[in-house]
Length: 313
Image 1: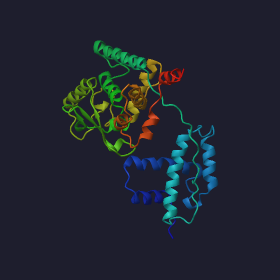
Image 2: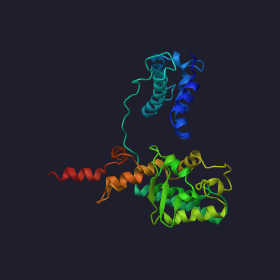
Image 3: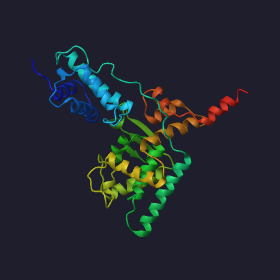
Image 4: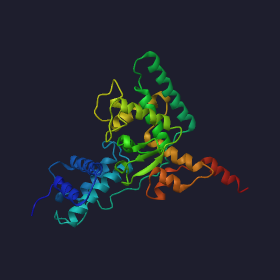
């Protein structure tokens, strides 16, 4: 009988399941981290429940950087699925999954959102740096400011995921119909969905499309690519690190934390505060598969809670 390594198990599992490259990567990382802990030479059939338990203890220790509960559950789930595949197909001579029931209860923290004043302050900062570039004729710390303004407004008005923005192509932005396509490859549920282009967002995307044509970005190419519009950036494709770097700089300027996902939470929360709020509309806009996921993104307004309590008197 062949002795299966972790690499063998991964390839076997991938051959059985039709997974995207992004999904495959989500398995490589947890397996790599576990192997680093137990030793690179250890075979899957030699892994015990004590190994999994000790790794969990390590991850939650200071030496393991006090891993978040949700991150551990993610690592545990991917390793458990891999071992289940190995056991179900008799690839390794063990009958008990070492990662079975190893998840921990994850604290449900409130989703972090941005206030209207915080969004206004961020826009003021962007506008200031845009003027600096225009009048000084030199790149500012947010260079190229006009491009990052488009990114900022796109996240604010659409609530799409970072990966969906990075995968967007010119053909995904239909200015005539005023519809933006959020690709299935960038969604957790592998579902494509459409987002209306609002009047406020339209001029920003129009500017992006015109600029993309000027630098020769073609159909099928990444349109949100700062490297094509910048005198500083030299990568071929824009990645998540470049977007996160922009938000880190903007956060330092404004004095509070901002991120693409925080705009997603903010959009869901603000829409649910509207008098004619509709949970199904919010669900469709965020591209969720079920209502329960949407409810996790919606932070109940404390003012609404106070009104409900006061109304009992």
